[in-house]
Length: 223
Length: 223
DNA sequence: CAAACATATTAGTATGGTCTAATATTTTGT
DNA sequence: ACAAAATATTAGACCATACTAATATGTTTG
Figure 1: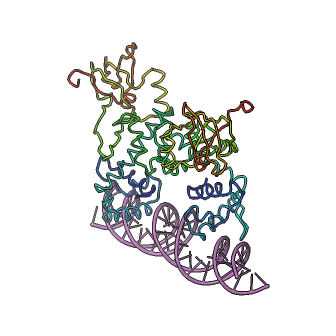
Figure 2 (figure 1 turned 135 degrees about the horizontal axis):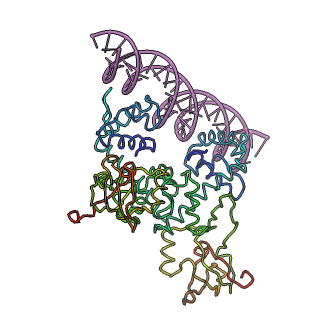
Figure 3 (figure 1 turned 120 degrees about the vertical axis):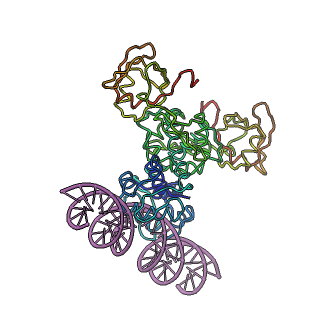
């Protein structure tokens, strides 16, 4: 059984290495705000436990076992966040620090119950996938709005980063999750979009906003 | 801020000293299954933090501050148990070990939300009071069924100790929380009771069972 | 009341998880 | 390619939380 501290290192490594498949001691150190020697010795321990591959002066990698255990922590975190928002009525900005603690609870039945009550979601409202109990994750579930082209119809599924200001911005424009957006026009020089949705037409979204909105295509071929 | 380990010592002391107002190092040691010297040095620390009164070779007492912080841990534990049962559908036997972990989460808003969703309960189904946010507890909320007299009508509010066998026993007799029990007769020689409820009459409950059932009087004077 | 027993304390050790300072290695820039 | 900078590692310290062994105090009982 891993301690919550060990779980935090695994989770950090999981997230930092998600693209390149590896991460450095320095990156983990900055991410967790823990000094490098501490990270170093912890990585030695995790390596002895068979969770991390750590050769001197080389980047860190998770073993398959380490990847699984890290994914389960991420699963617990994201399920908790969704549960707090969907079932208890918290706002998205309030739940992170609670989930950071609850993710270390050792009680699979507790998280499986949340999963059940939430209807087995595979992604959270930030577009981040929720790993399954087996550590599986759906990949690239959503698309950025900015990657779409003129004429497409898409459904708003999640927001990439939910700053208070962005959420407020979306609110004032009645852009809620689930809204169907039709792309009318894209300005080539600044990549801003003219879109219509819910009766509104020619709403302009800057490229910054379009980069933050995660959508699903609704065209015929995707069905 | 107290660590979860410190919180466990405070909670132990709170529960062990609830009747006499004090407890010994030995009692805490047995209760937590931690060796006496460890308890001793921890009590020294808690004493320095102003949470415990500890004079050499004397019993331990909580200070007012210590009592409050302990009560808040108990509050978190009992609210969590109730929430898991009432809102998530767990059975009473499953929730203790989950609550033992969640009680150490530092997030008042989380527990206050549970409290709100539960309708601000003051006692849990074992008849144990749930301390308020200010550490206040209702005293002697319920009565044992065995303390009642012939002719009284009472409502089953809680069970003193919920062993699997007792719960099963109650189940087979359709004795659920909220059932109104009428006391028909008490056998003087073994203190067993003949009671009626929900259409059943002359059901015999042994004194052992009557000691475990916590009830509330329904007679006129109590209103 | 004194011996035996239970309880409490002190002293010393270990491990997990953190730090700083010193040193080693790798990467970067001229 | 070499010096400087960035990164990584080792060594040594500290605190929290546990332990065992040894000792001290308090309680019970013949």
